[in-house]
Image 1 (cartoon, rainbow, N blue to C red):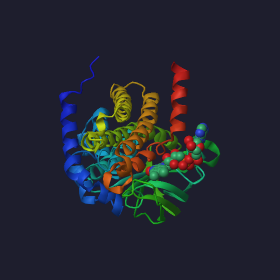
Image 2: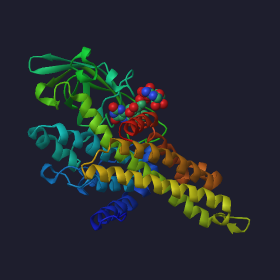
Image 3: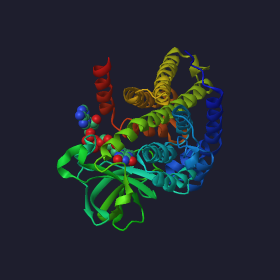
Image 4: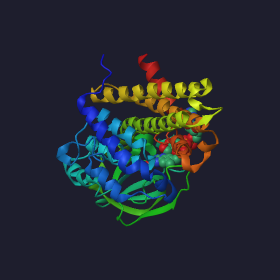
Length: 381
Ligand SMILES: Cc1cc2nc3c(=O)[nH]c(=O)nc-3n(C[C@H](O)[C@H](O)[C@H](O)COP(=O)(O)OP(=O)(O)OC[C@H]3O[C@@H](n4cnc5c(N)ncnc54)[C@H](O)[C@@H]3O)c2cc1C
């Protein structure tokens, strides 16, 4: 058993690390304050190969494996969580489902501009009455000639206000439950798509979370992604793999908080000694580091299993629940290590704490991840 990253993975880690250090960390507080994605930076992430990390080169991507993508998300997560959603949106929630379920024509049309950052993507499953119980969605899609006409209201669409392409789930057969859901490739300029309210959030300020209103939105039949009635499968496949990338970004958030806390503990003096010499502070640091490392290996394991073609849904859910709860714990403890300064905007860990919290909620809450883990355990254990 070899726990070392390959030379290729180390090289990718180095590239993503330097990118984050130079271009993101110095501006992370600004992104949080202004609440705006920097589209030039997003395009630079495209040029660096991050936006199309797991998309094959023939469709404009970088053709990396899942482990490499997780490493990129981890490094970017050290910088600005909002900008990781652009990378997660283009890879996990758009590129991956288009690759798995799209026709050749759809792959050639949608993937190259999304990988380069010329176009941005989003994924819309959730509705006011259908969160964890996603199959309960009520948006309808009715066939009319060569088009489907979509009506309904979607919420919590990450980057929905600027995405050029959005995968929207709607019911083509109201009586068929999950089997009546179909995935549609919607363009932002299609008449009938209205961008509604943008939510005020605790963190991830630069990533707009929007409501979408579909008012007789006409989508050509050819824009169905996958099979008619196959939308729930599209959603579940996307979320299974997406959980690895959310978990990886949570590792980045935790890693950055530990770095800040460790440095501070060596510099800050009280009672004539650096606070790192106090065993109660060492206990915080030891717990933070141990939890971070254990979560990191769960994330790498889930990504590795996917790359080997093994079942990974249980491991991805396990990685997400452990990594996201680790990130909340580590950022919370980091504030404690910094004392009163940790509570100030100026000291980064306050922002990281707010960002960590979302990783326990989106792409399936921790409770839902535990249900998936328990299901896997009971079936295979
Ligand atoms: C900032 C943000 C961005 C998001 N981005 C997107 C996006 O891009 N696209 C998209 O489609 N969605 C997105 N979401 C939606 C997100 O995936 C949902 O919020 C999440 O799935 C939970 O749904 P809910 O909020 O309706 O909570 P609910 O499902 O109402 O859950 C409330 C509580 O009940 C628990 N619960 C629910 N069912 C069970 C059960 N069976 N057993 C035990 N406990 C249960 C939950 O875990 C939670 O603690 C986003 C959400 C946020 C906050």
